[in-house]
Image 1 (cartoon, rainbow, N blue to C red):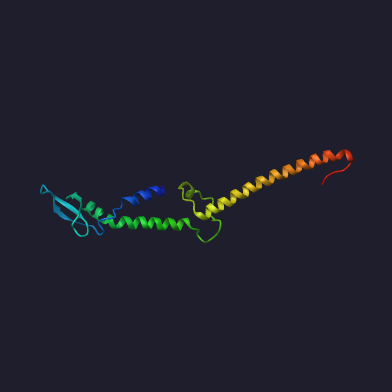
Image 2 (cartoon, one colour):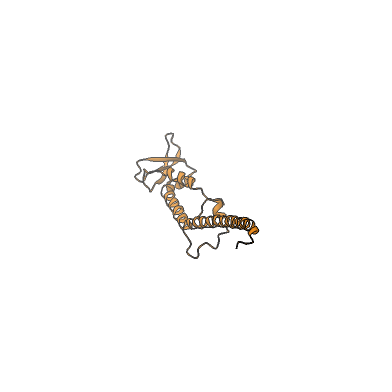
Length: 156
């Protein structure tokens, strides 16, 4: 998987983590209602049965039991790492890797780059406005020169 996990998918994953049945969950061999051997995944107290897995699914039973504690930890780590990525690296401003657009493609523009983009956009707007005003000034000087030419005067 080379694609970035979208923020909305991370939020969706967070909502699937059950708030009840505190970890750790356990798994142990048992029998189902028909007497077949199974793996039972239960809450830490053993009072709530979470899942029943066929006898050949011990690894799956362990995964389900471990997921209750692991998923919140993994989500918290993703959130922590994203917060680090969203902050300035501290080595420069603007970032030396500004031309590396992978973070843009992932929709994860760091705040300091957003500020830099805003400044660049404002600078470009002001440059366009300056060019427009210079052209208007030259045009006005030309009209003034044309109007004063018969009187023998030239505008500066």
